[in-house]
Length: 215
Image (cartoon, rainbow, N blue to C red; front, side, top):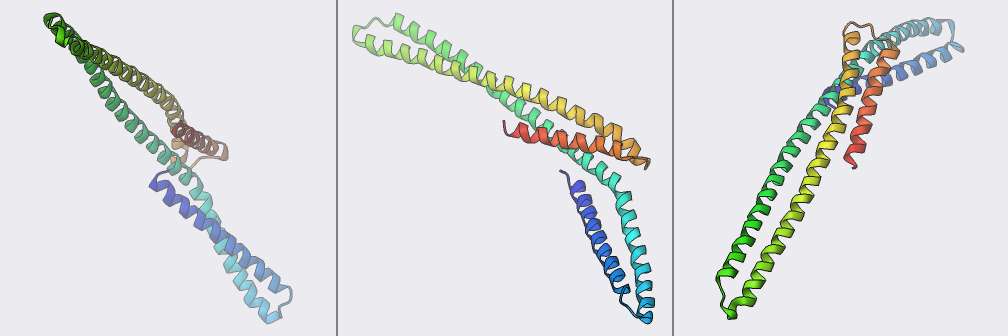
């Protein structure tokens, strides 16, 4: 979650705690009123009126902040998703480069085999035949090793492309939900159902990211 979401989330949490504290004070004042003297009741009623007003003010702040916090959280999650996608694309480019290097290594290894075979053909010295044969076999084994590495890297790159496709689909759903929620929030006309669209999209995408990272 982004910095904006964390900051606004902390702000809402502080409002919730403040509401709880003020509700407790209102309850305590009402309890004291039951056994207070007439003079004490005047002071307590004044305190009750002041505290009730303060409580309503904090509740109003929380009510007005709720859609805005939802927006910031949804935007922060979408921003994080875009950054993740950028990194994933960067990883793919890096792995693609490694795949190309391995393919070149396979070609070089095959060229080396042909060169070794040509040397063996040109060198008919009986005393060197065993060494030459071993040299050719080693070169062939190197081809097999490089080919296995290249095949494995090809599979890895293909897997990364599939992961990016899955990630893009999940991110697109998240961004679609964000585009639905934002205009209503900016106009101050968001209701609980619309708010739930953003929250659900956010939580669904974050759960996808958690599952995706555990692959």
